[in-house]
Amino acid sequence: ELKVEQNPLFLSMQEGKNYTIYCNYSTTSDRLYWYRQDPGKSLESLFVLLSNGAVKQEGRLMASLDTKARLSTLHITAAVHDLSATYFCAVVLTGNQFYFGTGTSLTVIP
Amino acid sequence: DAEITQSPRHKITETGRQVTLACHQTWNHNNMFWYRQDLGHGLRLIHYSYGVHDTNKGEVSDGYSVSRSNTEDLPLTLESAASSQTSVYFCASSVQGSYNEQFFGPGTRLTVL
Image 1 (cartoon, helix red, strand yellow):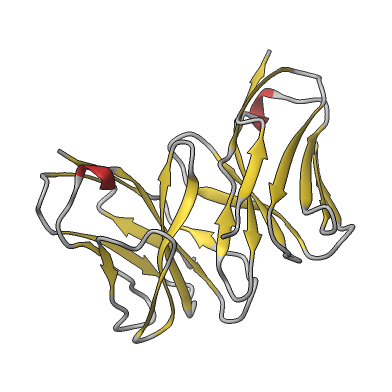
Image 2 (cartoon, helix red, strand yellow):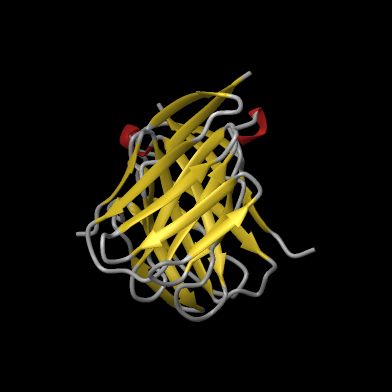
């Protein structure tokens, strides 16, 4: 059974600070997605990481994938309030089965 | 614009009742999925379909069923609702093929009393 663990589960950070969210998974996969969910809303795709060493950046968010370590990170640079949301990683196994992490609830404090 | 919709958005029902949640997409996607979201568990896959008349069980399928009679719709039925099925339910779809991005609907909040 594939396990996907995210940490931390809750993150409160001040504006302007940097932080990293970690996503560990238990079996081999070459594709991983990061999604964002605003309170009471649906999920929106942020990044897809396709291979070992992949790095994607969009604004203040940067995601990376290390398939050998079975680890993905989502790095937040100089956080702003608009980044407050819950972030999920989703590991994809053969076919289309997505296995989601537990989510990291991020609150950015002015 | 293409989209994926769910109805109802909120539902309150009683234990033992049959409930059907609707999911409709206009993306013309072959793949459709149902998830439930619970605090501490993230999203867990209930059922999925890769095309008309195709359905498959996911990680938490007990007590749920789906049927796929056309490309656009994948209704989720709770045969006899239980309090443990109180959750937020999301439908998603993706293009045919493997590893493709899933697009999510707005969700249905279901409460079973």
